[in-house]
Image (cartoon, rainbow, N blue to C red; front, top):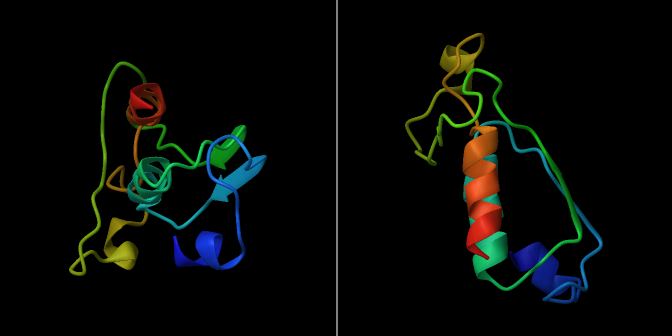
Length: 90
């Protein structure tokens, strides 16, 4: 959030494109961006394919999370349904 605010990124629909790629906690970031009032016109982010709609999955941030241990498993990121639900709440 601090980076968006520091660069004067306009809230509402003034943000044309947002790419989220932070390996595992993408939905946490998306939720914060949306709740701060940003409404990007286009969002590019990863969704885990292990949970097709209507299944929901969301790996919430934890300082105990091991990216190395999760590699090759479906325990990362969030599902397309979860992303859709987050976007639909706004």
